[in-house]
Image (tube, rainbow, N blue to C red):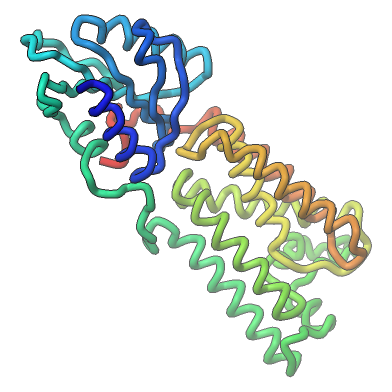
Length: 325
């Protein structure tokens, strides 16, 4: 019966809801594994125990999680074999649900009901409200591009139009037009340029904005854009435009979330993000038309500001219940 319940639970959570499977040193030799997924403030882990061993197993998993620096909410599925369940006090970041001798679940709370429901929660619905700043930035960039295209009489924007609208021009910045360090991030040279940048902004922006919130997302975006402008000014004499510095800053933010295992971004993403970063930087250095110093400046700014947000300004007063409820 126990194996049947475990098999059905694994199928539900791994195949249906995108959970991962990993081992840990359980106090019960045949139950030395757990299922987990990311949530807003860390991880949700599902462990299995027999009645009478659940407290020891809970403590064993807590030690495992602390060793891996995993902030975790634990759901303990306990097999009772029809024995009476003792009354227990509620513990923070912890829930229990019981399985009787017939394989039937009982004693649900809100967490176990949400996790063990048949409804597939692996794919989050698109929410325009949750990424309003991302969509607004995309709209602003597109509108500015259309205005410059209209002024140029072509979708390939003339250099004089870009300069008039605020491109990064070192000589003009030295003369006092410091706004160009930021305004250049809203200009694009042609249709392909804005198409790829807006796709990247949409893809990365929705991750960062949903994870950090709108205000902190905007902080990361604009500081990264400014960092890209400053680095380009210091090391590149050419006229420069594009949102790439800000976008590399968002990539740096996602990288920090994955590295630190925070804001619901899975740490397993980190190697893939590094590979994506390497490919983009390599392509930048291999082309003379790409302002790679702007990319690097945005990336470094994004990493620094997101690290500060995640380490020192994260919300520590949220309820201990997982945010998917």
